[in-house]
Length: 313
Image (cartoon, rainbow, N blue to C red):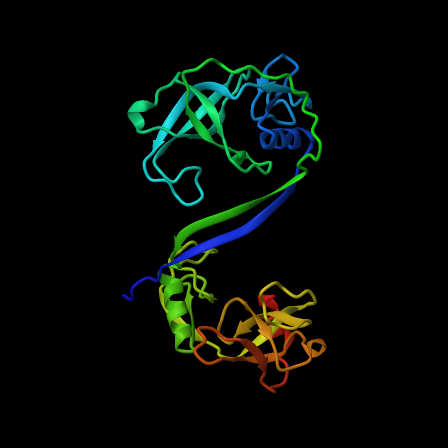
C-alpha cells in the first residue's frame, strides 16, 4: 500500500468585530491601566464584563472599577510556550479573581517554576509598555506581597474609546487526506482521475471518500474515470477573489466525469462565459508541473442528453 500523504497546514485570517458599550469600556480601560467589571442585578461584579447576566439574561451596563491586584483561584503550568502566547519562557496559566470582583480572569503568571505557584497566592497586573486597547495590554500577572491596591472609582467614561478589534485567528495542524484521497492525489500527478466504487450500490465516488456515505460500507475498488465529462450545473463568478489570478467573469461548474457517480467542481475556460450551459461536454486542460487540471474546456462534441446526467445534478 502506498504511503498515506500528510503535510503541515495553516489556516489563518484576521477576525474583525465591533464592540458594544461594555466591551468597549473594558478594553479602553485596559489601554488606560484601568480594569472594569460590570455589576449584576444581585450585586455580583463580573470580570471580564459581559453584556448579559449569564444566570438571568438581564442586560448589564453598570460598570465598576476593580483593583489591579488579586488572588489565584486555580492554575496550570505551561512548560513549553507556543507562538503567540503571552510569555516566551515557561509560565503558569492562572485564573485570577481581582480584588473587588466575584469572577476570575484567565491570563499568564510569570513565575520561576511550578513550585512558586499555588492557589490563593496574591498577584498583580504587569502592564504592557505599549497599550492599544486589547487583552494583551495586560502583559501578564506577577507575584505580589505588597498592599492590596484600591480602585480609583473610575466611571468607565473615556475619550477616544476603542470601538472595534482585529484578532488574528490561526490554526496550525498536520493534515492527512487518508488512504482513498492519497490514491486520488497520486493519480492526479500522473494526469489520471480515479474514484472508488461502492460494492453495494455500485456508485463511483470521485474524489473517493474511503466509504460510501449512502450504504455505510468501505470502498476499495479503484475505477479510473474521465478524462472527459459533462457540465451538470454552473455559476458565473463576477467578484474577483483576493490572491486569485483569474479575471472575472468566469464560470465555475459541477462536472460529471465519464464513469463517475457524482460531479466534482472545476473552472470552465476556452469558451465565453455566457455560452456555458448544462450538458456541455468538456475535457481537462493541464499546465506544466500541475497536480490537477487548471480548467476544463469544450471538447466540440454534441451536448449530452439531459437524461444522462439528471441524477447527478
